[in-house]
Image 1 (cartoon, rainbow, N blue to C red):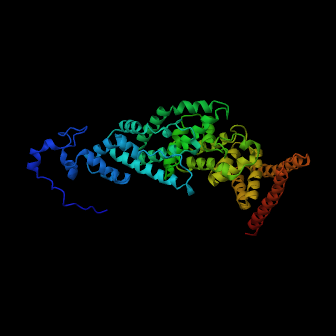
Image 2 (tube, rainbow, N blue to C red; image 1 turned 90 degrees about the vertical axis):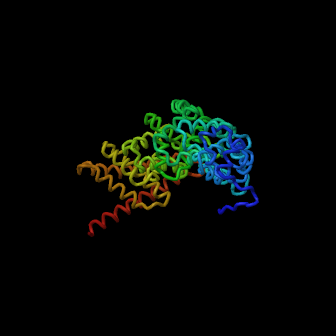
Image 3 (cartoon, one colour; image 1 turned 60 degrees about the horizontal axis):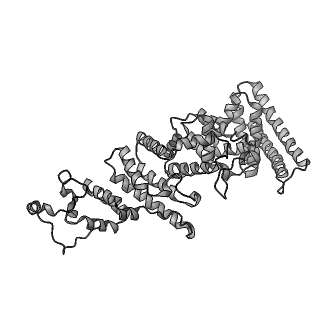
Length: 451
């Protein structure tokens, strides 16, 4: 925006006159006039500090951020303004619970404000070492209770942590890994996050529900959800998981990305072991697994990710195979095949055959292409090295279909039905899945013979 000069103001005196009137300079607050030449203030040197701060009140946060790059001296005065009660009250908006507006437009408005504020702090503290930057920023933000780990009494209805996360994402964007490590360590020390995580990973699942919820909200809203680049999200997720053994990593992954109750937001631990679940309950977990597998983070090998999936499928106890199959499908072809190939290499053909049955069942229920399941079986078939192993694997798949159908049939005949007749519907879908699976096998066989 082009600026206009009001020529009715008194013109700036020349250098000789300015030297003789230096005692009238008003910008002496917290700065040494010898080390911070007043000439770096440009036209602002003719204004008293109070007038300068009044001008700042009429500028947007983005404009103040741009102004802070004019010079080191101007930047210092903006920092001083932020530290004043009026500056703090104006910049640190705390309307985190006013969520009743139509379409919740307030959400995006306050998030954008803290994104701009993050950029302002990034520019104002540019010349400080990372440790000093973090200490200063914490000192300013400490008065916002909703930015603290346990600071808000209603965390599910609060945008405080999301705003804090947006602020930190903007502040640290472009920083190198070493600096980001320092940020994570600073946050862990500030919130005692490591000890809190230790409490929940070594406790019985669900015994510390409020703490599980707090950790989930802090990790998602502050550390993970605001990044535009997947590699950045993978970096922060790695910082959360890697200090722990694999079994604890799986527990943390479930707490942070697993299914939650729509009423209170708390983690639902029995969801995967009691009944078939839907895509929405597994999408967060699948996306996190893909994040670690696809982004090429050096701390994660393919074997690490597959082992993590294996551990996840027994949190808190062994999942229903249908839920395991659904997670693999949502995780993508590469992870699904690598997971199944690992079982083939380790001689777990019967377990693998049963998994293929439930892959077919999920495809039938969700109207996915059944030829995908057949082609996945064909790829796994080629992993077996001898004709005998391959023949036994195919026989195991056929037997698995028969066994699972009989198990479901017995459940229906025993009269063990709920209000929605889920056991009967499951049997119905499985019979159709078997028919469509074998139809695709026949198509594949006939097409191969014809060529």
